[in-house]
Length: 295
Image (cartoon, rainbow, N blue to C red; front, top):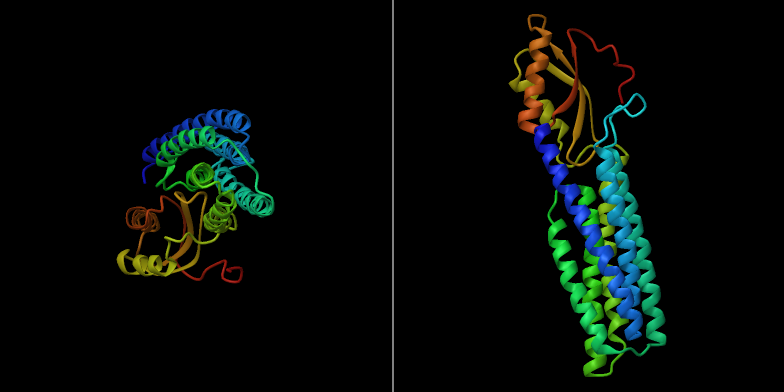
């Protein structure tokens, strides 16, 4: 993807996170006041949930802003990886949140508490609308950081559903056990989503090969489609973020091939066919000088 397109996409992601942060943080105050007035522990707990999510959104927004900083002598790749670190931290926070929900649910199964259902239902319904708007803003992004933030908002959305269901059950049937039961379901959904984000961000932090990069396919394409390339080896692929893969390789070319033209052709294939715009290519005419050091 061209650098200009990446910049536009990052600017859009940053705006989405900023809008989401202010919407969630603003309604968190409304929900906390409503929970206190309605004596609804469900709403108060969900307000605490929204406080955590507002913090996560703020962290994600900060990560986006930092990633726009230029590289330096100490951080030659710049601040892009901070986005991945923020996603990793958000995923860990989701596990903590899920554990807190399960703990609270067990407590309420043993000792359910009464509440004023009509005010609680009204506040939860407004919260549901706010969370739907924010989730639709963030959902579907290719950016890992935005996706992790969207999962936090999904937890809020499900919390609003649980709060509405609990208030409805109290209002219609006087049954206080719906809330802890639904909380267990929410916790399971959050754990599943958190694990996916944790696994993907952890893989990037460990500099694993990106999921959409096939080294064998790249090797085959370069040796068959680039004139003069007889062998490709010493390949290493990783990513700054899930949108920015990087690759290094050694290419052995025949004695009649110009090294500069081979390098240009290799980079064109990597960019046009595999979407790898950042690559380091070492051209060799004979044996590899790093043969004994290759992983």
